[in-house]
Image (cartoon, rainbow, N blue to C red; front, side):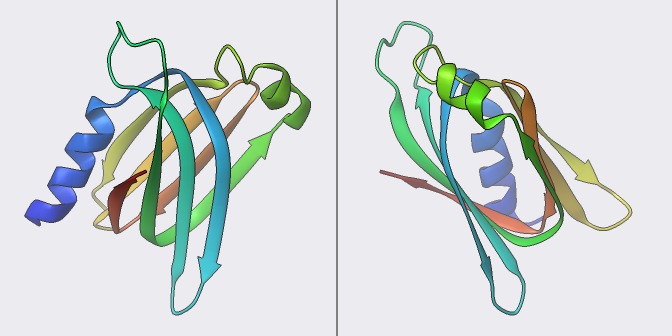
Length: 118
């Protein structure tokens, strides 16, 4: 397994998702699909301010995005992210990322990714 993708997976696994803020999603269709998620997450349990981070996923397949937008907006101050996880898709040599939102989710398979801290 590539060291770069493992570093990205480890970064995703170490993020504090609960009470984070989903800000924006961007999809780019070129030779393959790229999804960029803009979020605001706490660095640790004692931090009072969320830091903005962008996650870029490349080689995206099987994208599912469903959300109650009013719930996302109303829950923004308290945080509209419940949790997220990443798992290996052995049959396709890809990974599945799922972000559970307040009354919604974003889920897709991807081949590569990187963290773009702002």
